[in-house]
Image (cartoon, rainbow, N blue to C red):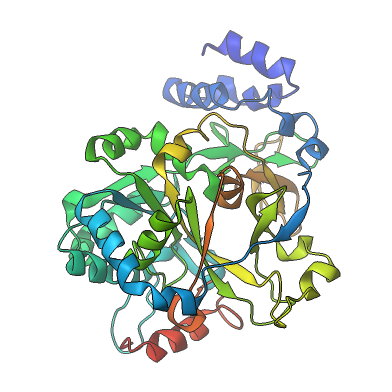
Length: 408
């Protein structure tokens, strides 16, 4: 894109301020800025009318799950199917690790955070050790694809290499960067963080598959012959990855996807629930649930909407291919976004001053024809590390790790 093309493009969308500092930039900086402008996609709805992004939800209804009791009754059958799938290289794992540990007071990739008390035990280490238990059982590696962000990619790669991937096979570790979305101010103007840098934020966990495509990793998936991808979040240190029982149960069910769930601790627990929306699998967020939905009970007294998601999903690759090019719903987050003002001064706001846009993996679930809700034991598989203190904190996750026999 030339300067003239950029100016014409930006003017048509009311964003010509992005070229305000252009004449003062070095040639390589000018090239960098023009490249960012070329990828903005300003014709999309979020830059015209944020209200157009308000997601219109359908009719919700409860979705039952394969319960702990049912899983135990068929565990060996499911495990055999899952182990065979791993041994036949039909399963890949995708770790969503694009975030920083800012809420923990840790200005590095969250996966680098040390959970140990008397020894070093990093979040990445916890997850890879969980995966190694499966690959040791199957005597076969599961390709591990790690999604980083522009902000943490180099540091994540260097850290894992320095620690020899915590015993995992380097040949089976693949990195790819999460795509980004520009942030805007209250008036819808795209923000800048430097004279040659637009504020670009990670596009949310729903963009992982398109980011893999952009990075060329889908070719690797095809070459290996992977048919199932297990995608999971970095911030749950008890996350069980490529769980053969989960894989086997999903394959046996004939469903296009599967989601690990835990029974809600209380009707008002702040967790998204796997359910049906217009008779397709979906997730209803806790703040979207009506009082009637929160308190509705089955004949046996259990909550009808009781199965909370833990961001551990299994997707059939051929079904995921159908989502490429689809218009994912964009979710809006009102945030405090540091920016460069019109005088070139860097401002750190104390109150939310703009909007970030992101896609969510929960919308990917709704794009599937079917999803097996697979119940797991909360105390064994759900130890989120989201906050420095209090609920879902380092301290609560450490307690759960110790409860599961992990030495800290």
